[in-house]
Amino acid sequence: MILNTDGTKPIYLQIAEWIENEILNGDLPEDEKVYSQYKLADMYNINPATAAKGLTKLAEEGILYDKRGIGKFVSSEAIKIIKDKRKNHTLKSMVEDLIQEAERLDMAETELISLIKETRSRNKGGEE
Image (cartoon, rainbow, N blue to C red; front, side, top):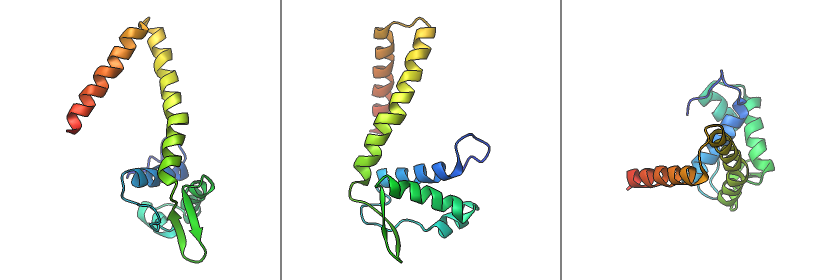
């Protein structure tokens, strides 16, 4: 992952999202130890406190849990929590933006739904 230091999204959130993606991709399975704040700081040349903030955010959400003196680990509910969070926040926000843009373009609902279905079908075809 490459951090976007010029963007509006804070680095600690980028770190948290990267770890979430690693969990969703199966690269960090349940009960797996995640990178320490110092390892993350070294990997991305950032302040360890920034890395710790990303890890703490995930722990507060129940995605990670602490083993005292050992580090943070992936919780058994991590995948469910991440998917629910992204469906209820990220996707809803994107859909709202999509609908607003479609309305600005006077696009009919059926045309928008058709576009979504075509794009999803094309993307699924590319995965196989």
